[in-house]
Image (cartoon, rainbow, N blue to C red; front, side, top):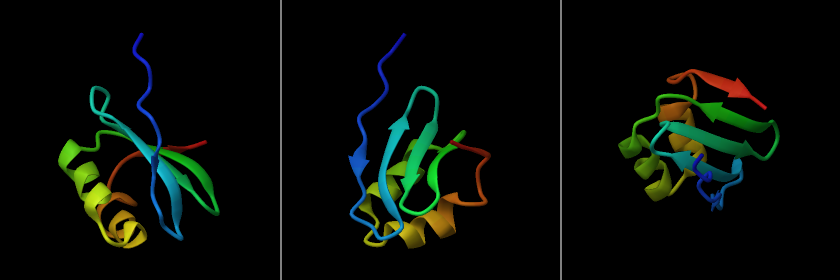
Length: 73
């Protein structure tokens, strides 16, 4: 059983942190207001875009939210 990746600080008003498991292609996001969400089947290049985005919130809204299956909690 592999250890989960470390959380990465987001420096965003919308999200506080995120972590990505490339083997499972799961992206966990800690939203400041609504808590933790796990997004499934997210490609590594999309997560790299999140890392590099100047506005994490805008990137989440345009590239991840409503684009991938997710669970809350």
